[in-house]
Amino acid sequence: MPRGLSGTPVVLLAAGAGTRLRPLTGTVPKPLAPVVNRPVFGHLLDLVRRHGGTEVFANLHYLGHLIEQAYPPGNSGGLGITYRHESELLGTAGGVANFREAIGERTLLVLSGDAFTDVDLSAFLASHRERGGIATAALTRARDVSQFGVVVTDQNGRIEGFQEKPASEDAMSDLVNCGIYAFEADIFDFIPPDTFVDFGHDVFPVLLAARVPFYGWTIDGYWNDIGSIQEYVRSNFDALHGLVQVEVPGREMRPFVRVGADVKIGPDVEFAGPVLIGDGCRIGAGAKLRGPLILGSTCEIGAGAVFSGSIAWSGINAGSDVDLANCIVGDHVTIAPGVVAEPGSVIASHAVIAEVT
Image 1 (cartoon, helix red, strand yellow):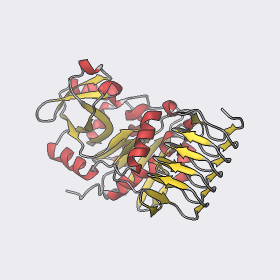
Image 2 (cartoon, one colour):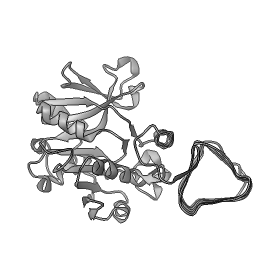
Image 3 (cartoon, one colour):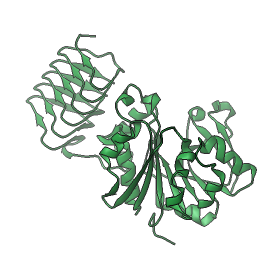
Image 4 (cartoon, helix red, strand yellow):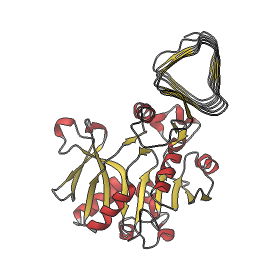
């Protein structure tokens, strides 16, 4: 049996438009949204690489060229990456079927491109092979199942049914689908070619009706879907607090404060961690940085500014005495001196905030 993911192709589903993350996804596709200053797509590649994977396929649609620019096709850090652009969306299953010829008869893994996770892919694949089913879905337990697809399994872990976002009192299980799958190549027999096909709506019901062996595997690790603003913030701050096994860039300047390369910090700056400051940032005198707080690369924070509970992408230029609390700020936003942002604001990339609000 191959060790880890050696010889196993991995498909990353990266074609979605990320509408629930707007306005942040107005200029970048969701897989490039940064989590602790690294695109979630990069975190997924790190995860595959960590488990010995060498072959990645990804479907692209919305702003897909930006993903290709960030992670060019070919060999990248030991990973061979192949892309397919979809002129029209093919759905989760249709996107995977696009790689059928390259995958051949091999077992494959599929990961949602908006999954932020440290799941043990090696153990997941080993469980799939041991049970011998055509498909295995990674599952996790959720306190509130109303925003997820609930999965019902028998005592042996075989999937018996699904509930799509049930009310909590109607849920038959607290297990939810992570959008991470292991499949045998026989799964392609259940996916019509060259058309929109969704695993949840079109393929899985057919597997259950045909009594094809289809199992669930409960993860022992972190998983979150960054598909909404709330969960995007949660993923960033969970990683910042060390709840996820991912690499957080920078060096520890002091307890709970990490800084990147070429960071300049003026006198009398106050920190209350956890705080992450990206490469090339400039922090003005007397600024107050209160965690959880993430600043992307090349941010300019003016003297006396107060930033707290927020996520700022790269290239922010905030004037003196700006007050930003519990906000998300896209790339290259300019904020005039003295602006007090409405708490909870989500500011699109390239915006100019010129007046005190």
